[in-house]
Length: 456
Image (cartoon, rainbow, N blue to C red):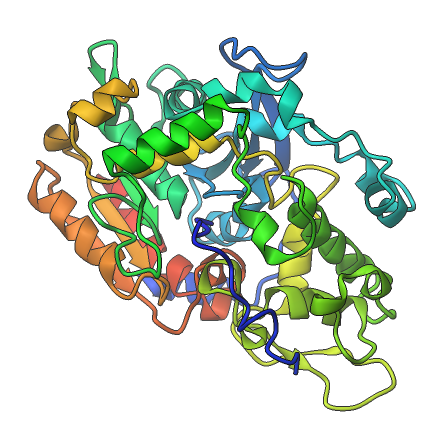
């Protein structure tokens, strides 16, 4: 996810509420966690970041066999977390024996209190304020959690995946996670170009070189904008507050909690009457009683006016009934969204505390050049021209074509041997993460690309 800082519109807050052959055989196959398809969420120790106890670590959601010879490491986008890729990972591993998928949770995930989702009353725990909230005024450490910190952490993950060079590593990401992967490839790690650590790059609806120019709000990286944003961080605004524009609360974590709660109840009791609906802000509350699945649909489906970057094509509320349920008619069944949102207490789909400095650094990374501004921020983007590994780029309707055009420019200005470019304008920004396997163009086209990497 890469949410725009220009304010979130929901049609004026509801406007009145009203090689794919191999994968085709997977579409009807139920997922099972056998010995070769385990899912584990494991911590990795990383360098000191100055945060509270327990924060000097990252986590990885591993899907697939540990005996795999190739590991696809995926980085979630803005406010995204490891469970963004759980469903895609299952589908890829089922289609490609010999591949394991690692989904990266940044160190910020250690700051979230998810204990309530392991109990019987998560609604009360979170909405009645019993959870451990992080005070921005006491979180000055996060002012230093920018791209350099993230990439050093990510390198720990990449090296662990490689097992001393005995396994191939493919690095990718979604949205700003794709930008992060590209930054890693061009980064100078004390004289070692990042791209030498990986065998290929996978960009899902994100990237650099103007990848987001087709959205309603491109990157904000002029020297004047950067200076203003850094001053705000120095003044204590250490967390990005974009999601507060949704209208579900004014804390950094408020919206994320609401969405995970909606997923939790929709996963456990989809047809029961929504327990969250009475607690919702009036402007966002459905006008008719809805089920738990119905409320999740209202929060995520594009038909209710949510911006492209936080919505999917799922379906609609039932036309009648005392309590309206959810009817799946789109490419992304609401049950799959609920499964992803309710994956645990951990991992989760939403990151609670996104550092504002990371937002600044990723915007400045967009030109993909070793500029004076980049150097002033400690961004070591010195090796973009040397990239020499294959690249896959996938775009939805989100950026209106600029994801692929930007990827083509990267390839043209580097030593990348070939690029694979795929487009599905019937998808919104989050559909590739949760869509049904039979209708997911991302997995259908990524499989042959990865197979080519395996055979190289």
